Image 1 (cartoon, rainbow, N blue to C red):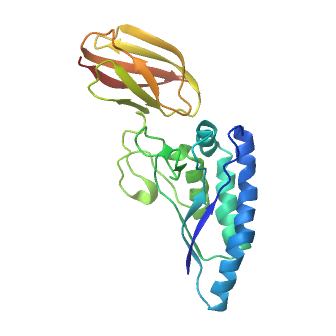
Image 2: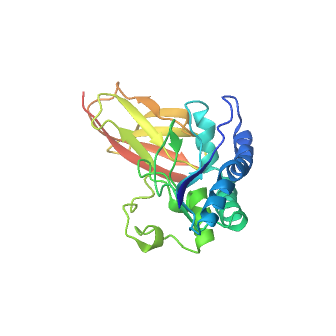
Image 3: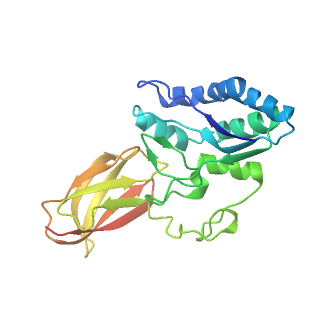
Length: 242
């Protein structure tokens, strides 16, 4: 017998990061009391195994997106995932199987579904609180040398490239997306192929949304966008063609 297993509370437009995190365990309790107990009783009555075919804790709706994204990246979210899957589904309800949705996915106003985020900005697997929780519960490991979860070859070889720039080529206005787990605000430097800095952007907020870099005053050519995130240098190439 298969059911969905989502437990979420989106809070309010004004909810802080801490407030959003504090809502999650009570949301799991609500899911348990209003949904899972009844399904478990039905499964037991007919002597069926009870499976979550897809489930997770999550935030949806098109408000307060910044704090929702920060919440699922917060180290404390690891404990929330454990509370949902291990403490509540297996230990308390005595459910039989839990399929977590999904292995990787982007973040948007529609939710933050993935265990890890897609290689749009190439998140390190071991930095994902969801991944940490699930690997600890299942006793699996993850390697960073191009080998993904449970030893399956993946496309995450370039995990240190945490910048996404588009469109390529660009006529001058560039969309910048950055994955950073140590800083919300970073300094951005643009250099030419000789390494000379030709433009700087100070204190750019990259915590939750795409930023626009105006490079329209640069001549056509190849440039590199460089970011120093707490001593870790990351860069990406951009082509200007007006």
